[in-house]
Length: 493
Image (tube, rainbow, N blue to C red; front, side, top):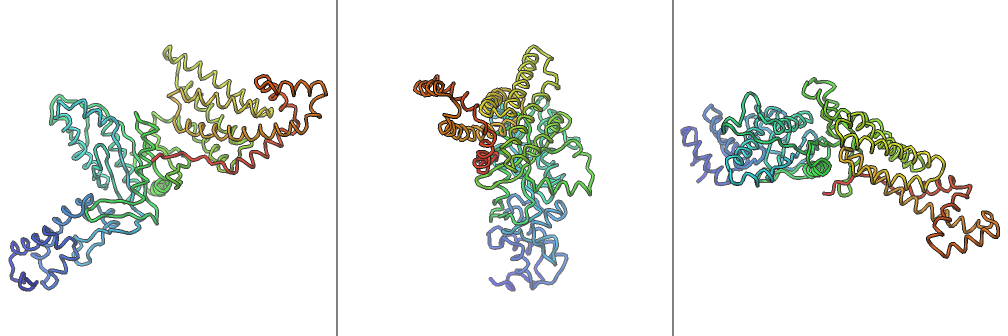
């Protein structure tokens, strides 16, 4: 059947709509461009526009996947970025399937405790269904209110996509608030009223937000799904956030998202964002790709983390400069001391366990002072040994920020490597200068003890201290070894 035989100007509205519907449903017309081409010989009319509008709606529902609700009226910014709009029939258009879109942002959210909740409630499917409707209905409404589209990726994962860093951040934070509130209220609607007397537990989330890069490709598949670096980065950030904070809220964003938000905030005001600040996490490595990442700090409950921000920035600067001679060691201990002081100031002494923790923190602060004193006295081996002791004990304190712990562990590992190379050089120097360091009798004792390894290790350490070029050797080693050392947090995905 040809176009002219199938439809003409006299075809009724109902027949025209049915005709177009059949071709959309059959897969013959999956794009708006194919629709407009098909009816191209028909005169423009109210009837034609109405049929095209309804046929386009059907196309979106079937072929646009995550973007099936995307319209210029409901999501104007996202429509502008994601759709090649028809110049004549502006209500319709086709998705940009493969191109670099700088103003696209994507967040991936994971709900902590979702799987356990479903397992615990397997005999009460109405409660599982309630949580399911919260994700499908309420989360969709919350996101749409911020101009953001959502999709349930799998299980408890929620994907959000928008055309503004602030829109996606706000949507993610509102979803977090929603799951953190037992009333589950949004715009005066409480979903739990559908099941009187039921109260769901509070759920925490972890999330990663990426996007805003000019040359990052976003692929929209034929079934309306999305893939590309923007998706991978958000997923890896979410995994990182979940690993650091498996039982509490954490939202991590890329530097591009942070910079875009800061630029937006200079020209816009939104009281909702007055409750957050940002914490530079440093460089995170994603399978060979490194990105600067920021943590959202939720005020006022996490405000004390801000007191570490300046200390962490100093640490990052020393790491970037590869200042292993002194700067990294001193700034790492400064961060550790700051973390301990924050805990003491938070009021550890409120319980017997708290008082024990406070004493433990004070003991570690003294150990930090000891490590710095040893380091400044050029007793580098003992200082690094003390650093290892400090880090090992800090790991056991759950209240210490896990980002801080990760950095201290990596720094400890690198200093142990430096120390191994340093002591090897010292021992070579000792053998060369043994006659200068000891008299004949002492030299004989030294060589005798060397045969007995345990006793030798003691005299070996004391002999190293006799060398007067220790600082010069330390600087040489840190220049040689330190230039090859990097500190990047790993995403492990």
